[in-house]
Length: 163
Image (cartoon, rainbow, N blue to C red; front, side, top):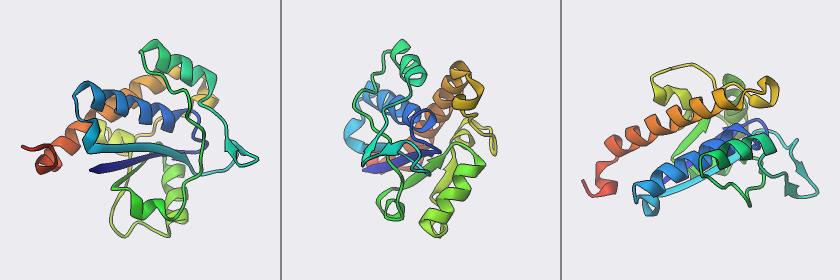
């Protein structure tokens, strides 16, 4: 099983969008039994009284426009233990990567990457729509990154998929 954790600052826009887009792509290809896909935050800003906030309404709306329902998702903060639990830890921007390496105490196994690295856009960041308000651009970036990542994983782990 391939285990993926998408990470952004608050876990209410970019990383849950990535989580649910990749889940949808995997499901449409009948590969869901081969994947564990989740998302988390580098901060605890969206977590109150032990509960995380849901996906931000404009992000939820954008997912729903594409037939993807993120209901039930609550923000959670990534932990040091996540480093050993997941095969891929995918951040949205350089600040996320810096925070992830701080939380995980480095990246000795080279598991941390940027989402758009998989869309042949190495080093480019998925802009935070919390600040830009541009959920269309975020959707496009997330979709491209997830599509590229899925192809990367299928080629890198052919035995996992019986090829």
